[in-house]
Image (cartoon, rainbow, N blue to C red; front, side, top):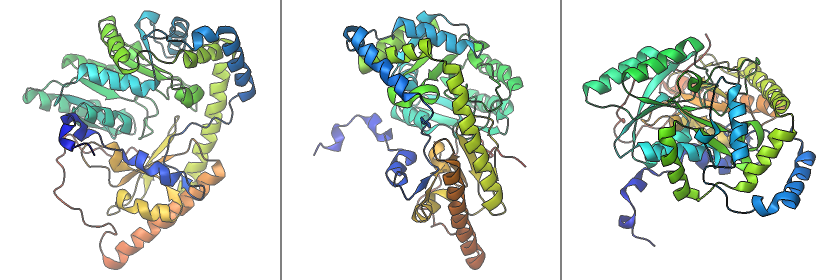
Length: 429
């Protein structure tokens, strides 16, 4: 056994996320998992891709199976610029750094910008993988609340003003503007320029994480924050629009950031896998990938509709939720007194799994919220999962009505301090 005192101090912040810890249970076949955000790959042309893989090895195997550039395959970087152009981004391939998924890009960006005790702004709630990266580098997270139209500019301004009075300038605002994970909301177009202006006024950078931007259900593609400000660090991924198992993402960064990001990438992986990049490049060049994305979004829209219909049919009074217009998630608020983290073991016993809201906050909040994912299960499984969840919620509420108290166990220890304004759950009336 290695004595714990040998570990670096920063490892204290490296804890397993609640969502990852849930996967082992949620993957059981008898459990309807509404917890994970796995893309549904059933619509991919696997036979065609298999032929593409064979041809890639046969024709270009000497290159594809060799070490490559730390910045990524040049042809793919050019194609990434074409993909981002759909969101109004004008980019130079030299400013694109290909990474092993956008999670690696987020980790590297945090590494090169954040020292211990630096402050990062993030929406409340926020992506659990981002919170894990911030904790690993010992950055402090200040949450800024959202409503049904995304990040609230007035609350962003308030948070920055409060921090400025304390002599603190956050390193950056981390935001998921489109089809937010986990909240499912989209930042209103009229707010985007205002958010950028507020951050510029306080000298705060912006990191835009946009894995879901092309997965809108109405056909509308929202303008990226990066299209409005060339200093924005933009993170993208093919995990949601092609194949998550290939782990190909990227960062579009200002030239002043690029060299440091490439050096950080070299120290982490030496180079991203050339084979995976070249396969993605071939897919973009030879396949109608935009029609494939449309096929994905149609399937996700059907699943979204199945979930919304089931929520309306089965959930008890007092529950509210948002209506996402893209992406993978519905964010649900339960009645006062129900603790979704404490309720989760009882839900799994009833053979349904979800992600409790506390995993999406850095400060212990979110106990009345939970994330439901509709991307992977069939519509029939989604309906059955929500029916089971409703039964668990009814049982919790029945205990509360009977004993006049919450069904959850008493909290142990002091309530953690709140770093930012309490985030209301984005929902429909």
